[in-house]
Amino acid sequence: MPVTELAILRLTTSTYEDPTNFFKVLKHAKEVQETASGYPAYYFHQIEDPFYVYIIGSWESVEDHLAFLPTQENQEVLGLVRSHVVLSELTMIHIDLDIIGKSLFTQNILNVVRYTVDSEPSRSRLSTKPIPVPEYATGGWAIDEELGETLSGHHREEFVLFSGWEHQRDVEIPVPGTMFKHPQIVETKHAKRIPLEDY
Image (cartoon, rainbow, N blue to C red; front, top):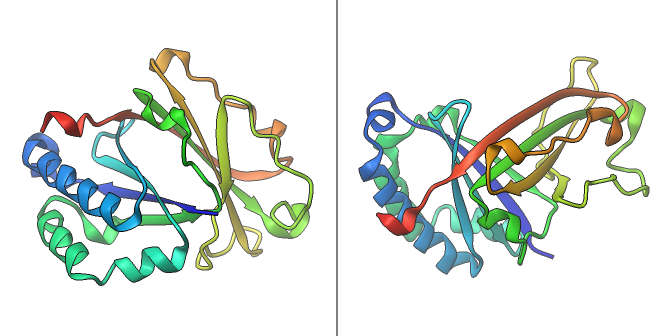
């Protein structure tokens, strides 16, 4: 089953003030990524803090994605992107989630909810009981090993929930307790689709 990549980029101040050239670079990056992975990629601009851009795409496996990173094609894209983003603030998460054919990623607004869960008391990720994801959303566990620890000193687990909407006013956000009894952090962000076809 394919995995989902969630990359979060922070723009430099100059790019934030005039993102046109950067969006042209992203259009090229999208073409390179889709050719390499064989799957669609989606690009969104965070609404709460427009300095942030979300890249969401699919790969056959984490290993396939990591093998792509040092390739000449990707390094050329990085060379174009480098001056537009703060590389030290790059976030990349791999999620155990197949989003192929999920129409919510083509909506105008994407809601991204990241739940940080303490794995020791809840054993949520190890449980065979499915997470009650709302019918209008899709989500999965982060499968990267270097997620660190929670405040209680236990291994940090992260569950990422996506939902797509035509308008921000329509967004529904599940009450944290309906999915996890003891989430330590719940981060909710909204992002607007970047119409790269216009650049």
